[in-house]
Length: 189
Image (cartoon, rainbow, N blue to C red; front, top):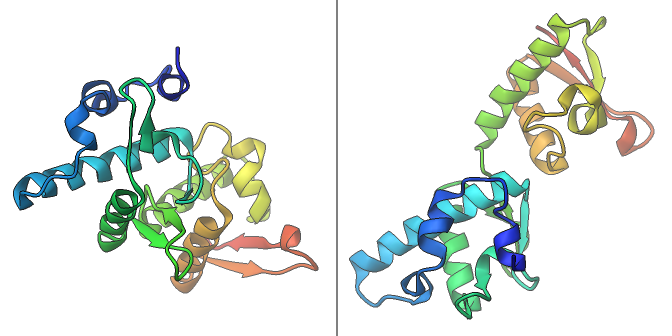
Protein backbone atom coordinates (compact mmCIF):
# COMPACT_ATOMS: atom_id res chain seq x y z
CA UNK A 1 0.00 0.00 0.00
CA UNK A 2 1.46 3.39 -0.95
CA UNK A 3 1.63 6.39 1.40
CA UNK A 4 -1.42 8.05 -0.16
CA UNK A 5 -3.69 5.02 0.17
CA UNK A 6 -2.60 4.43 3.76
CA UNK A 7 -4.38 7.64 4.80
CA UNK A 8 -7.67 6.11 3.77
CA UNK A 9 -7.12 2.69 5.36
CA UNK A 10 -10.04 1.74 7.57
CA UNK A 11 -12.18 4.64 6.41
CA UNK A 12 -14.70 4.58 3.63
CA UNK A 13 -13.57 7.73 1.94
CA UNK A 14 -16.04 7.28 -0.91
CA UNK A 15 -15.06 10.34 -2.89
CA UNK A 16 -11.41 9.42 -2.65
CA UNK A 17 -11.93 5.90 -3.84
CA UNK A 18 -14.00 7.13 -6.75
CA UNK A 19 -12.43 10.45 -7.64
CA UNK A 20 -8.89 10.80 -6.34
CA UNK A 21 -7.61 8.28 -8.86
CA UNK A 22 -9.29 10.16 -11.73
CA UNK A 23 -6.77 12.20 -13.66
CA UNK A 24 -9.50 14.68 -14.55
CA UNK A 25 -9.68 15.83 -10.92
CA UNK A 26 -6.13 17.14 -11.17
CA UNK A 27 -6.62 19.28 -14.31
CA UNK A 28 -7.58 22.96 -14.10
CA UNK A 29 -10.66 23.39 -16.27
CA UNK A 30 -11.18 26.57 -18.30
CA UNK A 31 -14.97 26.11 -18.57
CA UNK A 32 -16.57 27.91 -15.61
CA UNK A 33 -19.29 25.36 -14.87
CA UNK A 34 -16.87 22.44 -14.92
CA UNK A 35 -14.38 24.38 -12.80
CA UNK A 36 -17.10 25.19 -10.22
CA UNK A 37 -17.98 21.49 -9.92
CA UNK A 38 -14.31 20.67 -9.50
CA UNK A 39 -13.95 23.30 -6.76
CA UNK A 40 -16.99 21.90 -4.93
CA UNK A 41 -15.55 18.40 -5.10
CA UNK A 42 -12.16 19.54 -3.79
CA UNK A 43 -13.82 21.47 -0.95
CA UNK A 44 -15.64 18.32 0.13
CA UNK A 45 -12.49 16.22 -0.20
CA UNK A 46 -10.47 18.64 1.91
CA UNK A 47 -13.12 18.87 4.66
CA UNK A 48 -13.70 15.10 4.74
CA UNK A 49 -10.00 14.31 4.71
CA UNK A 50 -9.20 16.78 7.46
CA UNK A 51 -12.09 15.50 9.60
CA UNK A 52 -11.05 11.86 9.28
CA UNK A 53 -7.39 12.62 9.91
CA UNK A 54 -8.10 15.28 12.61
CA UNK A 55 -6.13 17.88 10.67
CA UNK A 56 -6.87 21.48 11.51
CA UNK A 57 -4.10 23.37 9.70
CA UNK A 58 -2.86 22.99 6.15
CA UNK A 59 0.46 24.60 5.34
CA UNK A 60 0.79 25.36 1.66
CA UNK A 61 4.55 25.07 1.77
CA UNK A 62 4.40 21.64 3.40
CA UNK A 63 3.57 18.27 1.89
CA UNK A 64 -0.13 17.64 2.31
CA UNK A 65 -1.08 14.09 1.29
CA UNK A 66 -4.38 15.01 -0.31
CA UNK A 67 -2.72 17.42 -2.73
CA UNK A 68 -0.57 14.83 -4.47
CA UNK A 69 -1.15 11.32 -5.72
CA UNK A 70 1.87 9.21 -6.55
CA UNK A 71 -0.29 6.44 -8.05
CA UNK A 72 -1.27 8.58 -11.02
CA UNK A 73 1.74 10.89 -10.71
CA UNK A 74 -0.32 14.03 -10.22
CA UNK A 75 -0.24 16.88 -7.75
CA UNK A 76 -1.95 20.21 -7.37
CA UNK A 77 0.13 23.25 -8.14
CA UNK A 78 0.34 26.12 -5.66
CA UNK A 79 -2.27 28.16 -7.53
CA UNK A 80 -4.83 25.33 -7.39
CA UNK A 81 -4.17 24.74 -3.68
CA UNK A 82 -4.74 28.41 -2.93
CA UNK A 83 -7.88 28.45 -5.09
CA UNK A 84 -9.45 25.46 -3.35
CA UNK A 85 -8.58 26.69 0.13
CA UNK A 86 -9.78 30.19 -0.75
CA UNK A 87 -13.11 28.68 -1.79
CA UNK A 88 -13.34 27.12 1.69
CA UNK A 89 -12.48 30.49 3.24
CA UNK A 90 -15.28 32.11 1.21
CA UNK A 91 -17.69 29.47 2.59
CA UNK A 92 -16.44 30.18 6.15
CA UNK A 93 -15.13 26.60 6.36
CA UNK A 94 -11.53 27.79 6.63
CA UNK A 95 -9.49 30.86 7.58
CA UNK A 96 -6.11 32.04 6.44
CA UNK A 97 -3.75 32.17 9.41
CA UNK A 98 -1.40 34.66 7.83
CA UNK A 99 -1.61 37.52 5.36
CA UNK A 100 0.54 35.69 2.80
CA UNK A 101 -1.87 32.74 2.67
CA UNK A 102 0.74 30.15 3.56
CA UNK A 103 -1.25 28.46 6.30
CA UNK A 104 -4.97 27.75 6.52
CA UNK A 105 -7.14 26.73 9.49
CA UNK A 106 -9.70 24.17 8.34
CA UNK A 107 -13.08 24.31 10.05
CA UNK A 108 -14.62 20.93 9.35
CA UNK A 109 -17.27 22.18 11.75
CA UNK A 110 -18.14 25.85 11.88
CA UNK A 111 -17.35 27.52 15.22
CA UNK A 112 -21.04 27.51 16.18
CA UNK A 113 -21.19 23.77 15.49
CA UNK A 114 -18.06 23.21 17.59
CA UNK A 115 -19.70 25.21 20.38
CA UNK A 116 -22.82 23.04 20.16
CA UNK A 117 -20.72 19.85 20.29
CA UNK A 118 -18.76 21.25 23.20
CA UNK A 119 -21.90 22.16 25.13
CA UNK A 120 -23.35 18.69 24.57
CA UNK A 121 -20.06 17.11 25.68
CA UNK A 122 -19.93 19.22 28.86
CA UNK A 123 -23.52 18.32 29.64
CA UNK A 124 -22.68 14.61 29.22
CA UNK A 125 -19.59 14.88 31.42
CA UNK A 126 -21.55 16.71 34.11
CA UNK A 127 -24.31 14.08 33.99
CA UNK A 128 -21.61 11.46 34.56
CA UNK A 129 -20.22 13.05 37.72
CA UNK A 130 -18.37 16.29 37.03
CA UNK A 131 -18.86 17.70 40.51
CA UNK A 132 -18.14 21.40 40.37
CA UNK A 133 -18.62 22.13 36.66
CA UNK A 134 -14.96 23.10 36.21
CA UNK A 135 -12.50 21.65 33.68
CA UNK A 136 -9.20 22.78 32.26
CA UNK A 137 -8.94 23.51 28.56
CA UNK A 138 -6.44 20.67 28.25
CA UNK A 139 -8.86 18.24 29.92
CA UNK A 140 -11.41 19.08 27.24
CA UNK A 141 -8.87 18.60 24.44
CA UNK A 142 -7.01 15.57 25.74
CA UNK A 143 -8.64 14.24 28.89
CA UNK A 144 -9.99 10.75 29.31
CA UNK A 145 -13.57 12.01 29.06
CA UNK A 146 -12.98 13.40 25.57
CA UNK A 147 -11.51 10.19 24.14
CA UNK A 148 -13.59 8.90 21.29
CA UNK A 149 -15.15 12.31 20.63
CA UNK A 150 -14.35 14.87 17.97
CA UNK A 151 -13.13 17.16 20.74
CA UNK A 152 -10.20 14.89 21.57
CA UNK A 153 -7.08 16.38 20.01
CA UNK A 154 -8.99 19.47 18.92
CA UNK A 155 -6.98 22.45 17.76
CA UNK A 156 -6.58 24.86 20.69
CA UNK A 157 -7.46 27.92 18.60
CA UNK A 158 -10.74 26.39 17.44
CA UNK A 159 -11.55 25.20 20.96
CA UNK A 160 -10.91 28.63 22.47
CA UNK A 161 -13.11 30.30 19.87
CA UNK A 162 -15.94 27.85 20.58
CA UNK A 163 -15.51 28.38 24.33
CA UNK A 164 -15.57 32.17 23.89
CA UNK A 165 -18.77 31.86 21.89
CA UNK A 166 -20.36 29.87 24.72
CA UNK A 167 -19.01 32.39 27.22
CA UNK A 168 -20.60 35.20 25.24
CA UNK A 169 -23.91 33.31 25.43
CA UNK A 170 -23.56 33.04 29.22
CA UNK A 171 -23.13 29.26 29.27
CA UNK A 172 -19.65 29.26 30.82
CA UNK A 173 -16.85 31.42 32.18
CA UNK A 174 -13.25 31.11 31.05
CA UNK A 175 -10.62 31.81 33.68
CA UNK A 176 -6.88 32.08 33.30
CA UNK A 177 -4.23 30.57 35.49
CA UNK A 178 -0.56 31.38 35.60
CA UNK A 179 0.08 29.75 32.22
CA UNK A 180 -1.86 28.63 29.15
CA UNK A 181 -1.93 25.14 30.64
CA UNK A 182 -3.84 26.51 33.61
CA UNK A 183 -6.74 27.92 31.62
CA UNK A 184 -10.03 26.62 32.89
CA UNK A 185 -13.71 26.71 32.23
CA UNK A 186 -16.60 26.88 34.69
CA UNK A 187 -19.86 25.75 33.17
CA UNK A 188 -23.32 27.13 33.85
CA UNK A 189 -25.51 24.25 32.78
